Length: 255
Image 1 (cartoon, rainbow, N blue to C red):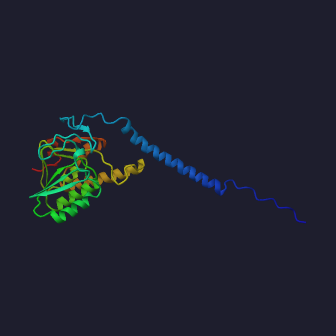
Image 2 (image 1 turned 45 degrees about the vertical axis):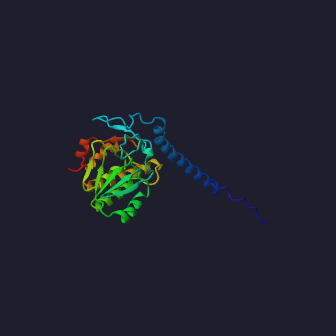
Image 3 (image 1 turned 60 degrees about the vertical axis):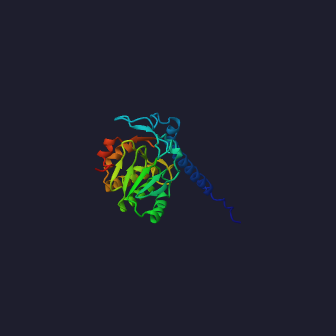
C-alpha cells in the first residue's frame, strides 16, 4: 500500500495575490499623478491672480494684468464695439473687405483649417490682416501665421485692438507688422497639446517641446525669441503687456 502524498505547499504569492498587488501599484501611481495635477491647479483656484484688471493702464515695470480669455474688459471704438472679450466670437470670425481681412475672436482648435478654407475662396485682393483676439489655440495660431507669411500679407493691430496669448504668433506672420499706440499685445505661459491636464512630468516635456517650436517659429518670422523671457515667467491666468518700445526691440513691429 503506497504512502499518501501530501499536497504541494502553497506558493508565497498566488496569481490572485499578484493581480491584487499590480492593481494596488497602479492605483498608487494614479493617485500620485492626480496629486501632482492638483498641486499645480489648486493654487490657481485658491489664490487667483492679484494683478490689476486688464483695462488698467500699463507703465514700465507695471505690465502684468489679470487674464481670462472670455472676460477681458475692453475700451472699444465705433468700428470695434466690443465692451468685453465675452462679446467676441468664441472662435475666429473672418471678414474680407477691399484689401483687408479682419480676424476677430478667440482662436479655437480647427480655426487654422477654417482660415485656409476661407482664404481659398476669398483671398483675391487681400494684402493685410487686421487682428483683434484674446488668443487661444497655439497650434492653430502658428499655422495661420505661417499661412500669412507664405501669402506675403502684412499684419495690423488698430486702436483698441488686442492681440494676446497665442494671437501674437499670428501677428508675427506678417511681412510688415504695425501696432497702433492704443493697441495691446500680450504674452504669457501656454498649455500645449490637446490635454491641458497632463501629469506633471508629461506636461513639462510637452511645454518644453512647444516652447522650442514657438521660439523657432518666431526666429523664422524675424521676431526676437527673447520676447519669450516675459512669457515664461507670466502664469496662464495673467498676461504681460508689451510696451511700444518693447514691440520695437523684439521686432514685433517692423520699420
